[in-house]
Length: 494
Image (tube, one colour):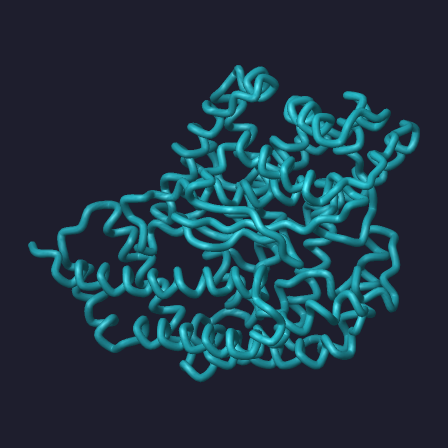
């Protein structure tokens, strides 16, 4: 049987992908290079582009083609692609174009304001913009929830993590809550007895950048298909053929920018190794945000903070910044495996990191489900920070509820991906070690080819061909099991 309906769909989705390409690069430029006065015009241009994509995707012909294509003789990959096309279409038709445009506009305005409001600790200014984002996000959530028969928050969570629900998250995070605070306390107590010398700066931005580029090269980043820049909040953007990653530099802190680069390089390697023969089709996209975060945390935490990798990094550090007592091998490892209760999520160690995520998850769920309002966020944030980490953020909005960029554009439902990603990363690294008995020796020698081949075969090359559950089961022999994350933390830190 001819595949004319399916082939027609592939041409439409290829076109959508090209508009998405333009949108991604214009968005990257907005965060990295655009002068402040360009914000309104850029926001309007991106909103126009999102409406155009929405119109193409929700055309009545698409529904007819999707139904007809089911009857055609498709192979496994084409069937998976059709499933992902259908999912994209079903998500899109739930929203009117006017709401898509409004969400884009209020998000750009809020993000642009955040850049100056955060350094100024201006909660009132930020809250005014955030209220608009929350209003639009609630409207979106209600439309999705009514159509899907889910809670408002679950309807948004499903966009980022298909099949995940807050009920499942409550079980996973409830398990974390039962052992993480105790583990955190034990590690902090243990490390309090160990003296660690903090590296002394300044660490020139130029040298930090060169060190970051050298580390990206070591980790196999393809510079013919991507680049490193600076932004207010580190991210990985662009498209698989042209991946843009960013970090931010602090000349008094060597570790933050470097591990930000390693984290984003994990995202980038995933993007650069998505199946080229399917590019432009939904099946070639990354499986989910949690699988994406599993790759960045695999690089940053599982690999990057391992003793073997840190020993590999050390000569690169001393070449750029000279020798000092803090750069003695055992101390350098201790510095990079230090567990401390801190305010900033992106700088958090892997033991305290889940506390930051659960805190945000609880607040954003209550916000979207209408149980709290924007005005309630600072007090709740302070209360939860004190509960989890023993720190107060009272009137410290900059390092509290204004530190992240995700809520500015209405990405509610994204935060759980970070801790799900950490769990997936631990499970994947465990499976890789079983499959590659020489892995630790290879890492010590800077030979990552077997490890990256394993990731390519088990995760990268599949894109969205399988569901998340199928992907992780194929790679590790079982569905998500948080026990691997706990065992990893206990083994490394106790």
